[in-house]
Image (cartoon, rainbow, N blue to C red):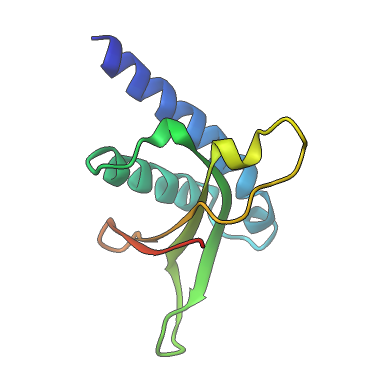
Amino acid sequence: MNSIIRMYCFIIIMSVIGLISCENHLKMDVNKYDCLKAVQVAVKHLENGSIQLDDYKIIEVKNNLFNSKGERTIQKWILTLKKRDLLENENGIIGKGGEIFIEVDLSNSECKIVGYGE
């Protein structure tokens, strides 16, 4: 029961962070709910994997406006997560590396890790 409550709290927090990160997209007339859905799909996917979500913070959510063929699409999103311990240290310096790059395709709700930071 406690883990279920924790999971829902994490989804809510990640959704709020996603909305804040989506602020620039709202100015471009991109649907804010698409941005939120991209964050939710990524969180759901990562919860089923070996990544401890509490160890990471979303630092960027970006709408990939063109696919690899140069065709216009607004269905693909790139999320960047960074290890919290590299962000929250005593000396105020952001640590190098520790990122996870995630691609979310809203057309089919697919999510995959496409890279890692140094």
